[in-house]
Structure formats: structure tokens, C-alpha cells
Amino acid sequence: MSEGGGERGRLEIHDTMRAARQFLAMISDQFFWPAMLTPDSSVSDRDTNQAVEEAVLTLMARYEVAQDSKAQRVHAPSVRVPRSSIRR
Image 1: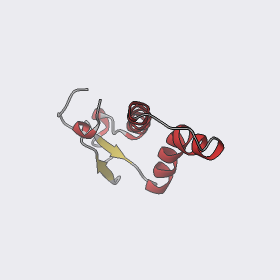
Image 2: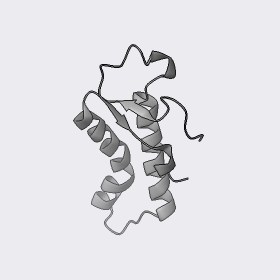
Image 3: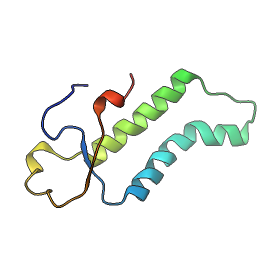
Image 4: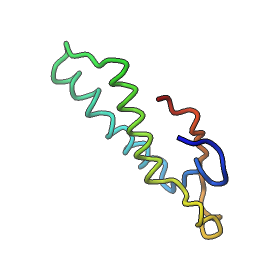
């Protein structure tokens, strides 16, 4: 992923609680349900990182502010998410 530049990395999230629930729903399938249904199950660090990264990328794709819509979305609250915080 490339870093820097304009609006990249800015998210427009009007309902942060909904976005948080969406994130948790995406990762619960990987962590919560296996632990509930098979207590002896375990999830590797690799699988954990991959599930979280995919959920973050999905949310970023959904809520990222398009570069050409800056003038139209100035009124909307935004959250800055540095792309460097996403581990690969």
C-alpha cells in the first residue's frame, strides 16, 4: 500500500458505533465463534493478523473519502487512519 498524498487514509464515518459493530462482526467469525463452539481451538498469530487486516481494509474501502469529493464532503466528520499502522 502506498503512503501519503491528499485525502488518502481519511475516512468518513457518520455512525462510528455501527462501523465498530461491523468491524467486530467481521472478526468474530474468526475468533469468537470457534472459541465458543470448540473451546480447545486456537487461532495462530498469522490468522489473527490476516483477519484483522482484511477487516480493516474492508472498512477502509467502505468509508474512505474519495479524492475527488473533498469539496462535497467538507461538512462530514472524518477519522484519520494512518496506513502505516496496518501490518502486512
